[in-house]
Image (cartoon, rainbow, N blue to C red; front, side):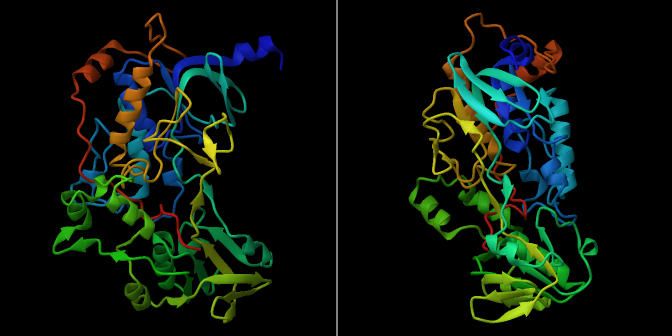
Length: 401
């Protein structure tokens, strides 16, 4: 592409937010309050796709009163636990309510630094921005262990991201691999329709959904555990223990008829083997083995270390480049829907502090309508206090292989 042709496809903004999930939309809400000219780039064809594409019975751990982004309550009765489609609908409604400029179907494939700021490349267009907020979250690439390649092609294999319900799998016994919340819940669901085994390296600590007549998140918020910071002594202890099972347990799984197996260590043809030396024939395997981050598209020196973004509460060492929505970015709830607002406000404040263009104009780019009435409504809204609770989708955790 010639320089002239490339320039014709460029769009320039004060800020580009990469990712239109909960973190990206929360950042957009705060950036709008600062009067910055920004755009949200969303890889999927519609907002909420990552939620809508999860399995049918997936519900939030937290009750609806703890599931809101800044400025808009979650539209569900208090005490109810919204399903994944309700979350997707909420994200779409959130962007529409505040007229947030989102460009769907714009997967960023490259980010580079320029003299004026940054250049972002997608399949069909490039964008320039003085500052960039990477809000792609921690759950980007489904992880399947390499041993899966040893299974015969006739064995049905699906990652938890592709699992919908027992009905979509072939009949017959199933093996679920992964001891996190996803693995426990999928195994329990499958056990109602077929013989099911769950392979886990170790069983994480379990917490009930309700304790002494109160929802778990009532206790977590009252005790301040969702605000525990990553660098505190308690935060370091909590991180070292990994994710908790919520609403599931080893005992409950056994009652549901699931047989527990040790860690999976090998797979050849139709046979899998476990750490205790036992084995079995398989025809259906569900990999509930979590996700891995992928920041390989960030081509900015000094940002990545061993594939991870180096930051301090979302602020990198490269002026104008930020991250948002990572697990334990600042607190226990940093990656979660109902608590990301605090980190989003902090990052947006840092963006605003670095400055706007000298002209001070915010402007209106393609897809970004600056309705004066909307601006007046937003300016009258108080700066929100982060909600006490935060959700944890039952699927989202670095599950044990």
